[in-house]
Amino acid sequence: MEIIVGFLVLFFLSGIIALLVRSLNKKAMSEFIAKLANFDASQQIINGNSGFAFDEQRKKVCLIENTYGTIKARVVNYKDLLSSEIHEDGQTIMRTSRSSQIGGAIVGGVLLGGVGAVIGGLSGKTVSADKVRRIEVLITVNDTAQPLHSLTFLDIETSKGGFVYNESIKHARHLHALIDVLIKQADADVK
Image (tube, rainbow, N blue to C red; front, side, top):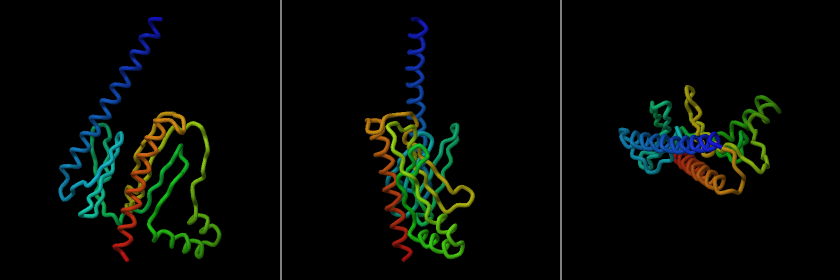
C-alpha cells in the first residue's frame, strides 16, 4: 500500500512540475516576443515549447521555439505562409494553403502526368476513432532551411468529444483559422 501511495504522490508531483515548467516556458516565450524589434504582437498562441504570433500592422508572423531553455524566433512576412494543417494522430483533418499553390497541382499534372496530379492533389485521410493521442498544427513557410513549424495542442490519449479533446481541437482550429485569414490577406495584397 505504501508503494502505491508513494507512486501516486510522485505522479501528482510530476504533473505539478510539468505544469510549472510549461507556465515558465510560456512566460519566457511571451516576454521574448514582446522584446522583438519591429514586431508588435497583435495576438500570440504559445503551447508547450512552440508558439505563433502575428503583427497585423507590419503583416509579419513570429514562429518561436523554446528548446531546453534556448528560445529561437523567426519573423516572416504573411506572404511566406504557405499552408496550415491540423493533424490528429498524424492524419490531416483540415488543411489550407495559398491559392497560388493550387496552380502547382495543375502544372504538376501537366508536367508529370497522372503522378504529378496525384502529388499535387494529395489530401489527408479522415480517420474515425474514439481516442486521440495527438493534435498538432503544422505550418509550412517559404524557407528552405526550416520550412515546417509545429504547435502541439494535445499530447496525451483522450476521448473524442471529451473536455480535454474539445478544448485542444478548439485552440488548434483557432490557430488554423488565423493562418487561413493571414494567407488570404497575403494573397489579396499580391493581386
